[in-house]
Structure formats: C-alpha cells, structure tokens
Image 1 (cartoon, rainbow, N blue to C red):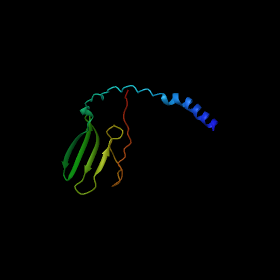
Image 2 (image 1 turned 30 degrees about the vertical axis):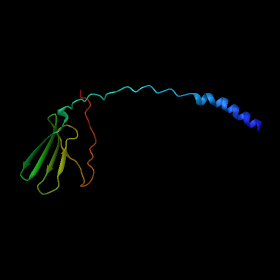
Image 3 (image 1 turned 180 degrees about the vertical axis):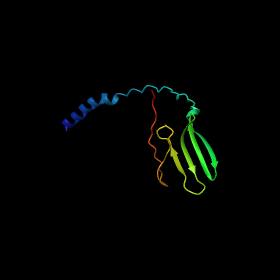
Image 4 (image 1 turned 180 degrees about the horizontal axis):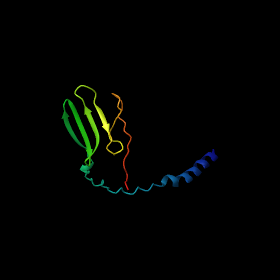
Length: 113
C-alpha cells in the first residue's frame, strides 16, 4: 500500500507542472479585406447576332469581331452548330447527339509570331 501511495505522489509531482502550464494564446488575426473587384473586359463577352433567312434562324457568335460559332435552327428540323476550331475561317459541324453532352476541346492561341 505504501508503494501505491508513493507511486501516486510521484506521479502527482511529475504531472503537476504539465497540467499547470497554460497554452499560449494564438496571435490575433489581422483584418484582411478581399481583393478589389476588377471590371471584366466587355470585348471578351461574345456578341450574338440573330438573323432570320427564310424559315431558318441563324445565330452568329463573335469575340473581338471574329466569328467563331454559327448556330442554325431550321424552321422544321434539328438545329446544328458550325464551329471554327482552328481560327482560320473554316467551319465544321459540331457533332452533338440529341440529349448528349456538347464537348469542345479548348484550343486557345497563346501567342503568335
């Protein structure tokens, strides 16, 4: 029994300084404001021109004045899309299955020399 009391006393002496320590308070958080809003360049927004020719509705999509997509909606039929994928003025049909995803791989021009 004496050993048990001695062991408890020894543990109390060892553990007392550990429990007596208080953790340091974290430093105060600075009041950080969000970055300023930068207005978007309106020239990057696509400009859409809608024309009616006969029974067809033709939508021309342009960015910076360059035509990149044409959507043709016939009066009776399924709409189809023509896309200039290379940027050379040659339009090819965008293969879209009804109800399927419209996938177009990004092909941006980073720089020209």
